[in-house]
Length: 117
Image (tube, rainbow, N blue to C red; front, side, top):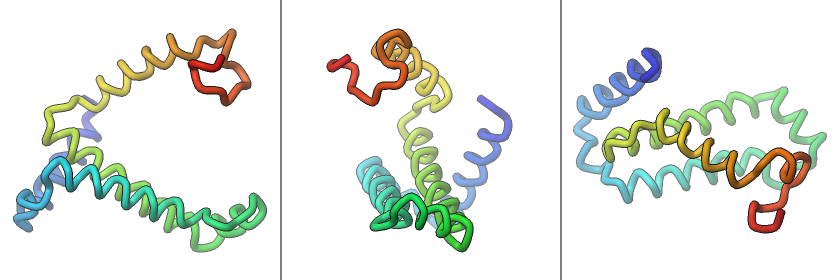
């Protein structure tokens, strides 16, 4: 595992332990929290057209987006740790699966799902 990632996980675990929050961080609650934080991220873009999004991100919006992305990442890291998932390995394996599902010659430039290519 990357040293920086390992360091961040250790800091997250320390933060959680010091507050006795392990009791609240069951897998179901962490999964729910990921979805809730993703919804908060989506709110940053809701009802805005492309031009409005650009303006929003140049103002306070980018900081809000960073915070929401960080919140999502925190819950993903905690869930992965608690379930014994090596996140980097899981991402590598998923990328290989996606390479097989979406071969360049079929998927390039297309937003179609793999079963419709």
